[in-house]
Picture (cartoon, helix red, strand yellow):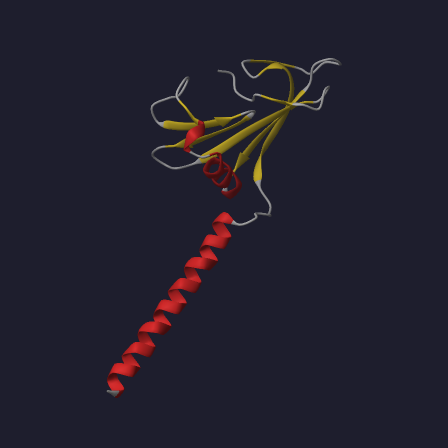
Length: 129
């Protein structure tokens, strides 16, 4: 009888530790996010397909976001944002409003793009296609 209770206690302990670990991971992945990110920026005039130097009337800030933030953004955009047009075979693209993210099918590298018109302060679509 004692073995039974020891086994039950051990089993319950393992279940509690596993559940705690799963809840902690869920909070990390789905809870509020804050942190540093990596990427690049460009300030340009024209469109993403025809970039020219910025002018007094035309300047756009384009941001490229990589790493964990890009992965989180891609996931948060969700599968409903899946883009079908202008997509290479080796990439999945999710677009919603003026946010665009792509993920390589093979390597899983994820990159997101956002852009802002610096003369109006409004977001703009960051892709050429």
